[in-house]
Image (cartoon, rainbow, N blue to C red):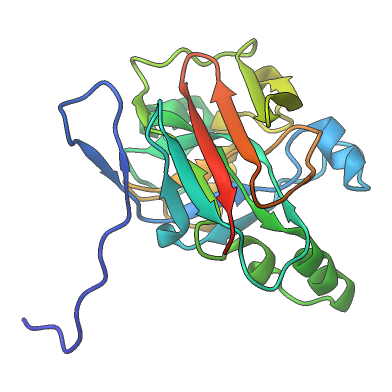
Length: 235
């Protein structure tokens, strides 16, 4: 077989704790919307609504090596770029209609990620009743730290998740405050799509989302998983 144009590269994320150079290949990126109560409230919603999902392109990942500062270009068309720190679940075994009781058998590892959002474009699309992919699925919209194998990570209800901007805490919470737990997310997702090895699931962000500008440095961390640092540079 021959491709008629050059085949696109496979998007990958470095693996922490494995052999040097190990990479996690990215198949799809799923994101869970409004999955912390306080964030749902700040976005104008309340209660434990049914989970909903959106997607980012696989090549939207911006790998951030732990201990280094990755550069993210300020995206075009927006005047309101928002940060959203999230625990990312990396799927190692696929499946459809996966019950919550066995969902964790499908988890290969975890990472810390940022769901960067062109908030003004997203809000405009919402007002017009149009899809808001343009607000979520742009280039470099998913900065992510190294994937840690599940057996090496320590993730539980008390696990802290935090984001600092220029050294000041903007978002902080614990994984136990997820409205929909990781097993429930996998159960719901796999009812709608057949999950595959290489899928990444951004599990939702706590309250405190806000805008960043060129020159800002974002430091995100999930206790027991890792951290990432990203500097916003002129696009």
